[in-house]
Image 1 (tube, rainbow, N blue to C red):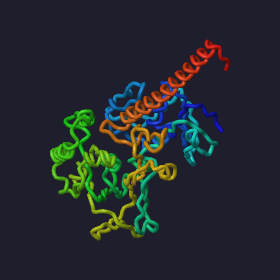
Image 2: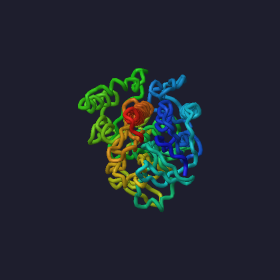
Image 3: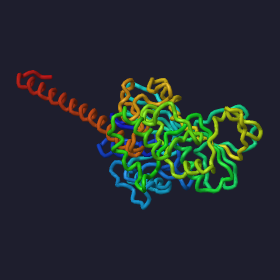
Length: 406
């Protein structure tokens, strides 16, 4: 059993949200360690395709106590993000237990009890920061097992040049799907189809050269009721009626989807132009596979070499936290951005909420919220302890002055 100070914290996950929270806690004098399942910092980033870029402006790509990443590009490349997070972890001074996978979490009178493959830990406060995109969501279609082509998740998308000369079906045109389609638009695939159930909420990366995400603070201040019509007008203004090209409108507005379901806007950087020019084709929803074809909901069959499923992720928290009543019906935390779980004192989640400024900004908000709350509680408890000691000392002095021995 690892040492159990009366007030200490454990962070599960050494991603940007976990690192930010741990650094803030340490700065406030709270003993903290991080448990990380991978063998190095930024492991998910390292495995993504080398041309991946953030879809947030570099101005919003910073964590507490660190400067904005200095880079010539507006939207930062993968390797710059990896370098930034590695440097942040190295300078945080927080111990990180790598290759330590959490197997069970239990609430005890003394706090939280965590079982891992590398032993057991205890803490007064447990911060969960494993991220929204922890587990790939891959639908099971009829015939997948006999399909002769390759089917991958968008997380496994390789260098876009590897798809040159190939017929590619991308299922889903949300954030990750549109990112892949943007990259393919600058490569030389033989054919690209995009299969959608609902059309995406999509905006241009730049307007007359100005990065749209630079206005994120403005969007965040707008009344919630205004977001759907504003973004619908912007999409129509810059792209026209995308239904003419096979992209239907989603039944839910882009602002509502983001705030309610955490589905962020897709950003166009070549995809829409390829669609309008006929290089790409939007087709109906994929419903199954045969040995050499993908079957669409309208009865059409297409024959891709590669199928890329941009079908999202899940947080994968159910096994560890569902029994605590801390998750909603979709498996996401009821308190996703650094608010203490009301049913489970000392349990915190960070990195599961979505804001217009992006995940770095959200990580900072949650980190400060968690550190402030835990520090206030610790200080309150210490003050109460000091007051009790003072009262006991005064009582002993009073008894002594009265000639009473204790």
